[in-house]
Length: 440
Image (cartoon, rainbow, N blue to C red; front, side, top):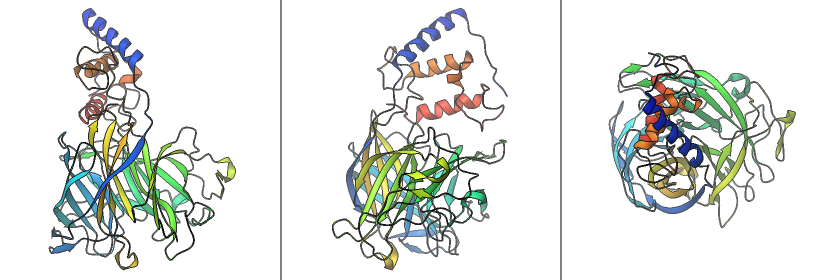
């Protein structure tokens, strides 16, 4: 049901809301300067009992993606889904507790499920709205089915621009927006039709593709428009940091969303360098002004530019360090105003990588801005600016019922209605952000 463009308020309510809106406008938070600090790493237990098509103990190997499971409490203990690729792809549930600085206090497997008995290169995992997990393969994103059900493809990359992904360098990462209605994927290194793979002298071209997806919940599919292809952007990865060695490469291995839906990109590089054979870099990206390349079949990189006047996303380095074969990255619990834990996993690489083991690595990320739900500003009557209180809800509802554009937050995939209408979805999306602790 469309709730209505402008639902009438009483005169008294209008006055109260108007005052709160003015205070929000004067005290709204700006985007923060993000930085990341390494905190700790621990070796993960080497086996866990399996469910799924072939119940048996799982000898943990091939960890490639991690994401915090949705709809959990507000403490520092959370459960995470971890996906492993290889001949018998598996998804494990990992219980992790961090301390107030983001260091790992404990990490233990809760359960694991074999997703398939066939070889599938599942590289990363994310959750859509309603708590539905999806995994990314070489060219597509698939819904993880309940036990006994068949696989269902969610989206496939546009064949015109990403149809020639290189084996084992194709789609490596997936991330979902905080509302769970937008999905981003990225290839690890350049497609066949784009410029060459990374080298010691030059980085590679990566394409970040967005999709608007049908939202599901535990009761079944909500009646939304079908999945649609969104903008695609070029991302320029870094060159190697040393000489040539077997398996040398540099590309994108993980995407992650911040509470304000900015994307963090994690690059991993391997090169001949005795001090740091592996280098991990994390960047916050900004697509403002970037060219939509979804219909451009071929691109050529020359230094920091791309053929045809294509403008890549801008990127800001927030972390660089050496952590061996780090592949998966997710936002952890909130540690304080503007501070969250980050959790990452290391792939042991099988027999081809003698340096890496199955480890969980933690960081603290600070300067995280999310003024989407902290809207009441400094003059709120309860608490202080940077805290989520009832005042924030009152201000948002004031915008909503007044038909203010700031109350239209659900985006294009809302139901019922459409983007530009004020519907119940806008309230649901705002409250989702609010209860996720989305603050400065």
